[in-house]
Amino acid sequence: MNKIVKSKYLHMFILTAIIFLYQVIISKIGWKIATLFDYSSIDKDGIFMAVSVHHIFMLLISLGIMYVLYKTKKLDFKLKPKADKIGMKYTILYCTAVLIYFIFVYIIGIITNSVGGFGYEVNTINVIGTLGFQLFLSGTAEEMLFRALPLVCLKSVCNKSGKFFNIMILFITSLLFVYGHISFNVSLSSQLFSLVYVFIQGMAYGFVFLKSKSVIYPMIMHGVSNFICVGCYYLYMILFDAV
Image 1 (cartoon, one colour):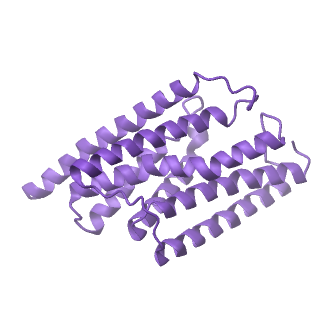
Image 2 (image 1 turned 90 degrees about the horizontal axis):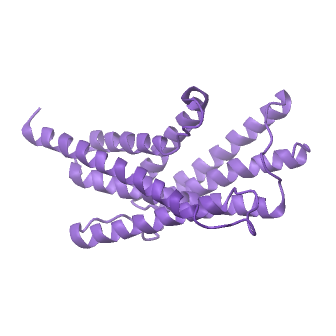
Image 3 (image 1 turned 120 degrees about the vertical axis):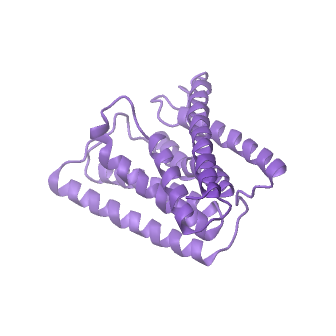
């Protein structure tokens, strides 16, 4: 391994550590800010307002960091809307696959009676609030934090060094994405399936980001897949009087 390659690996390791710390710290600060406000008049069950404020904070800070890096390092984070055939194709295929997957999951749930209920009332405000968050904020904020910012920064270190480095940075950013979705209130073993699913999502979103050269398509994929997941759950609960 020559010195140039070793240097790139070292730079990637250091930058990954910095990105990881940034993601952890910005998320914690976001939650601190989100809990400063009283949302009970809008969100009495506390299920969508605090997490929305948390994600808006992460989005705004990440956009600020990107702006500084764009001005100082000329890094292009692919934020502009772009009509791209590859991006559109993969987005449609992915969203269709997610829809089929969750239809299958809830059919199995019907047969086995294995789908649990919600810990809150399924009413108009809660449905609109949670679905609105999933569709418009979850993907928008998280794709800035977990995809555009780290992928472009890591790729700049690699200096566009080919498929191997692309796979490596996809793997790294997907692991960071998984860490961001770990719940430390329950055992890791009970989260294993969902975390594997998150990792696969991260790889898919990152792949489409690199292929389409636009963050818009991963945002759509992320938001729509979350909307489908939660929306199918609501539909199941309402149709089968499980609420």
